[in-house]
Amino acid sequence: MRIGINSPVVVQLPGASSPWEADAGIAELGTIAEAADTLGFDFLTCSEHVMVPADIAAQRGGTYWDPLATFGHLAARTSRIRLATQVLVLGYHHPLAIAKRYGTLDLVSGGRLVLGLGVGSLEEEFALLGVRFEGRGAVADDALRALRAALSTRTPSYDGPHFSFSDVVVSPHAVQPHVPFWIGGRTPRSLRRAVELADGWVPFGLSPGELAAMLARADLPEGFEVVLTPDAPLDPSGAAAAAVDALGALEEAGATAASVRIAAESASHYVEQLHALAQLRR
Image 1 (cartoon, rainbow, N blue to C red):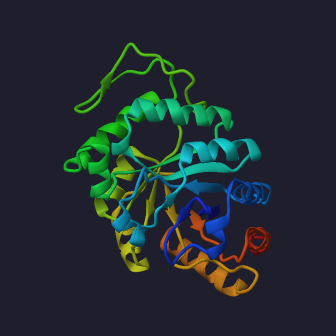
Image 2: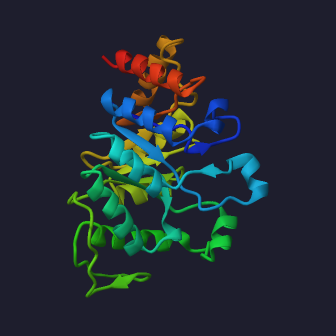
């Protein structure tokens, strides 16, 4: 099971993020990314909300760094770790816009992009952006097909119920012939979407029993990724046995990769924890 880092600083959830993250910036994040890269961790994450209504930010948080700008910077400070959006909301973007912007990121990072993609659940954000909330699942399915057709080719074409294009040039484009798609969600429909149209599934808010039951009913293709997150941040230097047990539980539940949060009191402590976690993996 590979281990990726659920990046600190870039998303700050009430009750979940550490106090030091509120005052941290790109310097601290870059130092952490460089350490994760050097130590052999598999990926870094960055999520997306364009804006969060003020009355909802108290529950969902209001700090969400833009993934494209964030990963553009981190791509220049790292050399091998993958850069995973977790997740982009498909309804907020035309597939060709994702293909151009994130295809460029794949190019400048040397082919390290993973596109985590989701249907979206915050109706108020859809309304603020002028995007229709009802029927978003069908639009997302068509967007996934259109994005796959467009992402890794200079002259894409596609004809679907919601998106259609031809006689266009998208340059630059992704250098990976097949950029991995991971679908976020917590419903059987999200898992079916991932199996049919993507390469992996990133569930949230499900118990181990619910996860095991859903995965047991699914016919997962060869190489399909199941990316799970431990319930609590890992403390590999202070509670090594608990960290090992938490990772083992994810693997037992069917994870092929873990997206872990790290307990830390500062950016420098976070780097120390990454070193301790890397030792536990050996």
